[in-house]
Length: 181
Length: 311
Image (tube, rainbow over all chains, first blue to last red; front, side, top):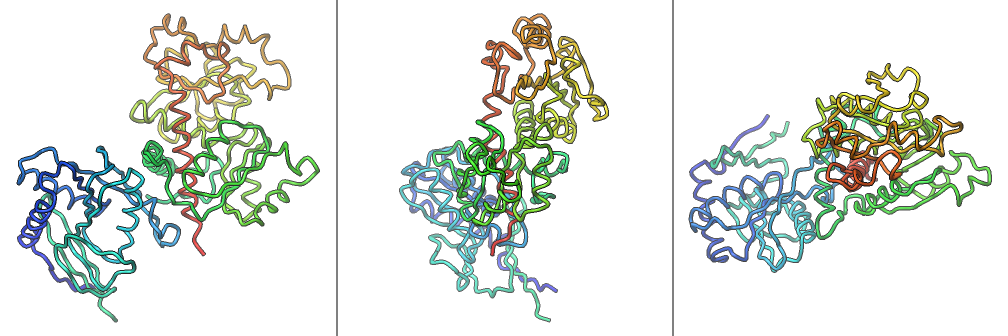
């Protein structure tokens, strides 16, 4: 049985993403030295939406964007019940000496972003790496990792699942609870 | 689907079309990896792979070794010419000795057909067949079909011709299985003496006239004449073979087939089965095949290693 709670409705999600965009603009000016990189598979949609909004807000179609798959860098290869599904990596621009913003939907144990940093370094040596996340599940970290830009901080226990559901440029965030029997 | 249906890669005949698609989709990602500034990933860093080559090989061995190293696996190499096999050790003893050194996977080439199947039933390691006699050479067939897919978009519905020594060729047999599973039509062409009896029972077309065969196909895979496997003379002279079955620019001009995709599993005997002019032309995807070989072998090793549970 799953009880469902809406953490962010479509309007709240929209406002949150807008705020994250303006926070990015504060730090990255015209983005000429910056690259947005979505972590596959679940960070890709959020990164595309942020990329599109930044282009609209800045009226600058030149903002760099890519998608990064971390499958080959994961630390749970051969330790999972289900096999890892490999996705594509699409980074068309140079990342050497650039300011990278890694983007994912939920920060939980920190293991995905650790893999993401390893994967990123194989493309070059960025000047800096920041991390943007829509939902930060604090108190669940297994590695010393924190995000630079956070949409909403959530206290959730291990039996709870947070799901970001996208519908085009819009979406909402759910908290599903596995009820104890 | 994200898992292979088999625990070993012994031959194409044991794979499903979905397995082949999974290998290709995974190879696409590895092809990206080997074109990056840093051409390796850490996936197999706790896996040890033994390359056992009981028969000579240059390119397959190099390709497997590179694939293993680019996956960060530990690699040990063994070749029969410098081993205790010469002192009378059996295959199982040799392999069990190597496995005692905590090896997880074995890539094996052996002159006897079925050697890899035999081994897979008797030892506790994942086996990859890198060629067993005149039986199968599955990774070569996978990289050939992958290269066709890359050049022509898909394999399904394409007409693929295999020319040459079909009788002694494990590449031909594995290619026939792979191409058919992917929905291609296959024709074989060569001298009658080098055509296996009952080859039609595999569902392939047979043609003895190269001109007629070239008019039919989208892709021509030119095999090498394997003189080292031929116990008797199967044709009067190499010169006569070249006249009848050699691919030259004159022949393609005459047939107006400059659109054909030309493949060769290597090593090439220039001027015998294929002219230098064609081997070096844009029609030939021979070097693409070599590059794709590393990506496809990385995919096979990665997907098989995934099944070895940790601990």
